[in-house]
View (cartoon, rainbow, N blue to C red):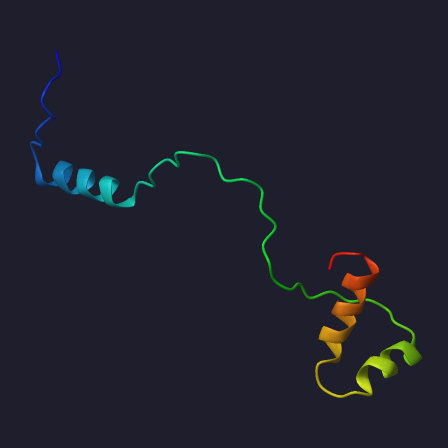
Length: 77
């Protein structure tokens, strides 16, 4: 036998119940898989002057060109 929901006897209990209902995070049906987010991460690396100059000689976008070269070397493309 199911019992009816408990009635709140005071305004404080009613407010607390409403707050709890509004702030409780629902449980996920399935756990999320470990997904590597796509994006960029700022790092600091040491690069030889001539290598850096090679990529910077073509102007803006040199960081993207270095990233592309690294992806190609790592066989990620």
